[in-house]
Image (cartoon, rainbow, N blue to C red; front, side, top):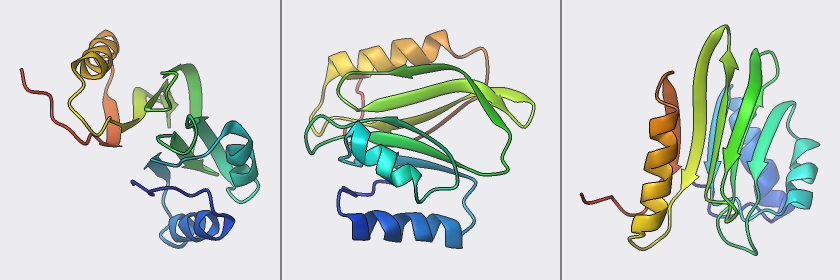
Length: 140
């Protein structure tokens, strides 16, 4: 879900209430625009696990929220420095997999696409569930 910035406490609360109302088990959020400190504040409203790759300034930022009661254990976390992707390799209800949230650059960025493709290729021995706003499509 591209939330287009949830820096405002009011908007952040509305997003989290919508996730709860719809009984979302796993949410993959893009464009959170949140710092690490703001993600900590978000944890006070979310009952469950919250993993984040914070934004640099007020752009990018991704998060993965997992509802309480969902059995998920992280083995390894992968992220970039720009807050554009977060991949979690772990166990979900006894199944090993990778969960990922991606917020791609607004312009064609072959270097970014190449890094993500390479990382996904190294993780392809298990199922991969990605959600994201890729913004631009890689053109081979």
